[in-house]
Amino acid sequence: MKKRLSISDIANNLGVSVTTVSFILNGKAKEKRISDALAKRVLDYVKKVDYKPNQLAKSLRTGKSKSIGLLVEDISNPFFANIADRIEKLAYDHGYHIIYCSMKNDEQRAKELIQLFYDRQIDGFIIAPTEGLSDVINNLLKSSVPVVLFDRPLADVDTHTVISENVEGAYQGTMFLLEQKNAKRIGFVTTNSTQSQMKGRLEGYMKAVDNVGMDLLVKKINPAQTEEEVVSQLKDFISDNKLDAVLFATNYLAINGLKAIKQYQLEVDKLISFDENTTFGLVNPPVSAISQNIQEIAQEVVRILVNQIHGKLDKIEKVVIPCNLIAR
Image 1 (cartoon, one colour):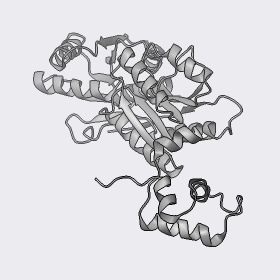
Image 2: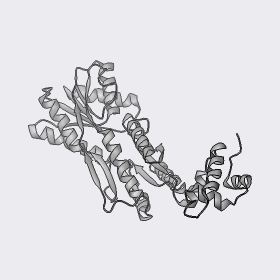
Image 3: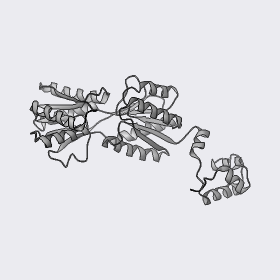
Image 4: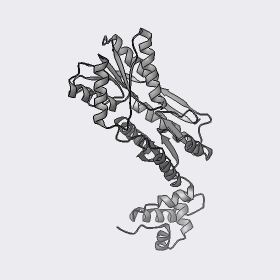
């Protein structure tokens, strides 16, 4: 690789001072009364040699890295992958680059990643927080680091949040099964997580079933279990309770449910999942979806964070975005 040119190299090659080159590159030529001819000579040379500034040195000097840390549960999950893609594009339009990673619901891993990003002087954080991060996020806020939480808030962290209407979304999804699909015994499959979005989806299901006086049929899955174990448990849950419809709290649970139905030839064909998946319209039985508005979530998250970075927000924003029902 070619040696990276420094401002000192440019100054030496042109026979001018490092300070003069620095002023010109930072758009301060007129302010510092540098002649147009000299400014043009420096800029033409910089273009000719394809000079790229040292971003780390620049961030140390200005306190701005033009980068944002995006931390999610699992970047391979379609919901987080799609939202990361949109956030990255929107942030780039504002002049920022995204550095993203998966926390894997591992509290220690998450804390280490947040510290790593903080040490790199990123300009702000977008976090779908795992449990146990309240203290470290509150410390970021005390240090005046811009932070936006999305997908799930933390009860003891008072910062900007962007979430979906989990309760209403699950309620509407359950009512869809009750009214449109004429289901009589509706099961709800979720995880044993205490995260707020999962609690909201359970609450929405319970509200709908209570309204019509049907039995509450809930199965909580431990995410640490193997796929084989989960599929077996779902088979037992569906067959033992004689379900004719199932609402899944996440799309990956719905996929495991489809595997159980196919593997054990279960007679249940009314399915709906919280979060869409590209396969849901292709499989048999088809899976309806309570789809989160990914584009709007991404727009709000980026808008709020960029405004924080630029000091344009004078109050904390709590944004709640409706879900869309995709009926199949």
